[in-house]
Every structure is written in C-alpha cells, then in structure tokens.
Image (cartoon, rainbow, N blue to C red; front, side):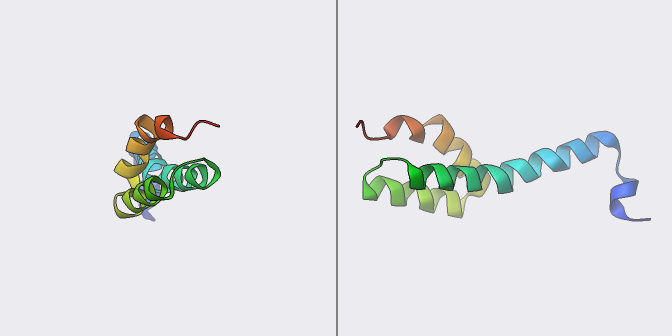
Length: 72
C-alpha cells in the first residue's frame, strides 16, 4: 500500500493544511508583494523573509506587512 492509503482522514487534513501554509501561502504573498506599492527596501525585506522562512514569513507578511503599503 502507498503512504496515502495508510493515513487517517485527520492526518490527510493536517498534511493538506501544512502544504497550504508552506507552499501556497508564500507564493500568494510573493505575488501580493510584487503587485503592491512598497519601498524597494521594504519589498526586498519581505521577499527575503518569505524565502528564508516560507510558512512563518508569509503569515507575518499577512499579519503585519500588508499594513505597510505606501498610500497612493
């Protein structure tokens, strides 16, 4: 049997949640940073944080970084 068939439903849900946090959320954050208006220094800081700490960096960006956008 493959590993996927040996996992319980709860374990599969946890795996999907971890995948979303570690892979999808950072990709969405990087796209949002590229489309947003930040100073170059702040943009590079957030990108480096997300690249070095994908899950945590993306969560911090959505909690803190989105408020730091430049006003138009």
